[in-house]
Length: 240
Image 1 (spheres, rainbow, N blue to C red):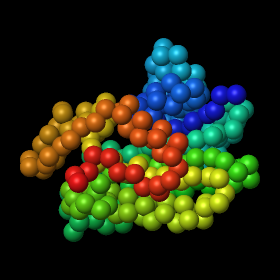
Image 2: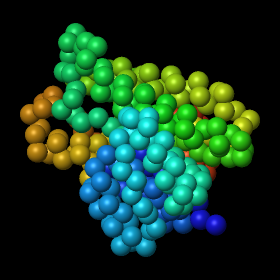
Image 3: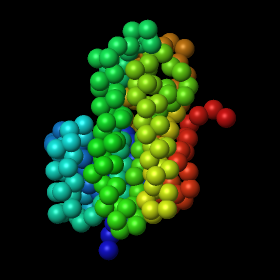
C-alpha cells in the first residue's frame, strides 16, 4: 500500500522539491496551500511526472482549515504517514532592524513558523503515537542561530520553533514517531524568495553572500531524515 506525505504550506521551492523526491519513492502527495489554483497547478505538474497527488486548499495558520484538510486527506488517501511543514514568510514581511521589532512585526512570523507547526503536530501526532509510527518534518532558516538583523523578526520566530521541536522530540522518544528539523542555510531554487532576490536585490544587504541549492536536493535531505530518524536537527548550506 502506498504511503502518503502531506506538505503543509506547499510552495514552488521546498514543497515541490520534497514532493518530487518522495513521489519518486512511491509516496502519494497531499498538496496543502492557501491558493486553490496554485495548489492544483502543482498537482498537475506532479501528475505529469507520474506522481499521484491531490490538492487540499487551506490556510495552514487557521486551525479549523488545517483540521478540515487533514480530514479530507484521510478520506482521499487514508492516513498521513509523513507530514512536512514548509510554510515560509514572504521576505517583504521582514523587519530590517532588531530595534524596530514590535509585537505586530512578530505576528506573521510566529503564525507561520510556530503556531502553524503546532497546529499540524496537534492534529497528527496523537494518531501517529497510537499506531506507533509516523514522521513530522519541519523547516527553518539560519537567522535564529546566525544573527541577521535584516531578518530580525523571523529569527525570533525560528528560535521559538526550534525550542518547540526539541521539546517535542524528547516527548516522542520511544513512541515510533520521529520529529526532525531541516535548517536551510541556502536560497532555495525556484522559491518565491529566490525570485524576489533576483528581481529586487535592493531589498537585501549589498554585501550579503548568497548560496543557492536546488529544491530537489533539499527534498533528498528530507528523505534521508525520514530514513535515518536519528537527528532532531540537520543542517544544510552552512559554513563549516
